[in-house]
Image (cartoon, helix red, strand yellow):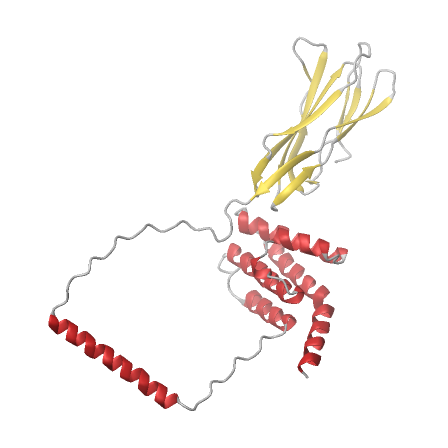
Length: 310
């Protein structure tokens, strides 16, 4: 919370019931990057004083765009007043998230301090368009085949014989030659460094194709993780990787960097967000940092593979 909120001094009247604080959101499901309205309501009798602090730039996993308290208004047919904290939030990652409880400090007419807090709220963030989704193309009408005359049939038969003779000649010519075996795949560390170098040196960002760049760097890292941990990395989502790394008990720095990397990638891939140049540099630096943390494991794996071959 921002420490500098504003304080309402609401004087007079006699202490009655305790203040009531509630919280709600305008929807429980939203797409990545959508604006969600978060409202905290405070009902109280005159004579209470409150320190009404607003939200900071972030609230747990959410980015806070705006946060402001309304002026106190009277509640009809009661002796209560009401104020509202109206905030707009956005999430740039997929999954289920919790909006934490919000605390309000106050004191009654007897100058006794009290703290009131809202309940936690669950919200689900979904993708705007699942990666790889495409509309099915329209079905095409079947082609009606016409009967070919005798001359066309003979010509077709001769053409088939010529093609067969050509392939027999190619096979005879190549007989006895041995095809060279495919080279073994590069070690994971060497492969990921080459792919990262090629991506960074490409003209994708200069051409303004930000989504393509972030999709490719995400695919490179997923493939790298898959090879290092012997898992189907090309088929896993960012959320599945985060769960896997937690279960594998990866170091805290790795979990933090991976979370930041996924947040940047998902924001551009799914929320139609246009990144700044500093964010492009940051996502590349995060990728190289993750590679660096896994380097000892890659080197050890290469040594084991070398010993098995020898």
